[in-house]
View 1 (cartoon, rainbow, N blue to C red):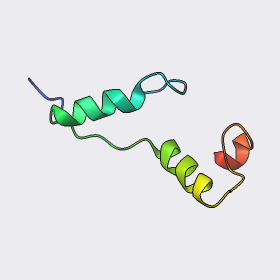
View 2 (view 1 turned 90 degrees about the vertical axis):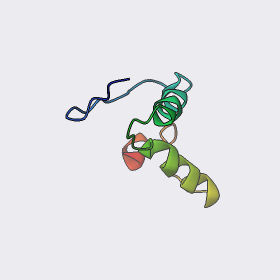
View 3 (view 1 turned 120 degrees about the horizontal axis):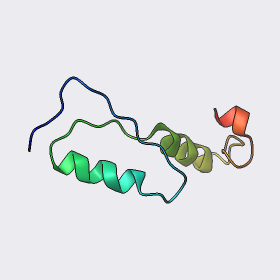
View 4 (view 1 turned 180 degrees about the vertical axis):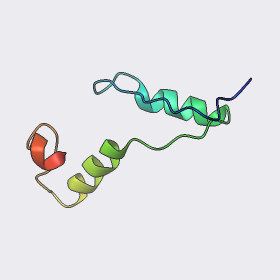
Length: 62
């Protein structure tokens, strides 16, 4: 498979759309990927019972 080395591709979509699954499969194929930042923020907010969730405080989450 030829890899695109000089371009960036941005994945967007709602929750449950398959972004994380797609990223995991692309990584398995050897593509360099960055993890979804929003997922990490939500997980850390859950750990500390924080208020910054996209469904509770969209501007704080941003």
